[in-house]
Amino acid sequence: MEALVKIFSSFGFKNVKTFIQSGNVIFDSDETDMDVLTSKIEKGLSKKLGYEVDVMVRTVHQLETMVKRNPFSKLDEGAKISVAFMSLKPKTKLEFPVFSSKKDVEIIEIKDRDAFCVHHLVNGQWGYPNLYIEKSLGIKSTVRFWSSVKKLVEIASLAE
Image 1 (tube, rainbow, N blue to C red):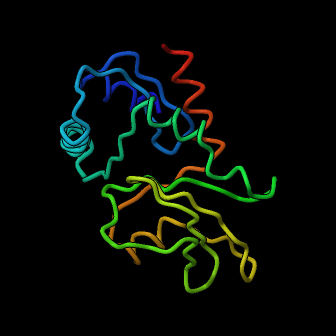
Image 2: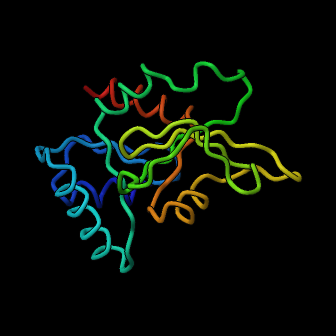
């Protein structure tokens, strides 16, 4: 992850930090257009790494709002929950909750480009929302457990 900090710093971003090994990067930028920022990062990573990387950018404010709203508050304590950060807002109108055909993934809500998911254990395997969303909605996504989203907010808040 140290290499990722160096790469993002080379893009001109400030206060670059990473969290766990799954590509979570926290940084400061003067750019306010999320599409421009996403494109800049994707092009820069492609150039530096030699392959394409899908990037999902969210502001600290967006994550803070999400955590405060907590769409999972009515679920049992032990539920395995996550957020799928999608590249686009789905065009398909859905009736929630939405279940995968195997019933191993449940989407309880989609707000803008974020799907709030519950993983279910079916035949000894946990559902993986990323695969379901990309197949069923045709939208690129990356999934983070709810605990990681809350930790990202905490880290970003400490940096401010």
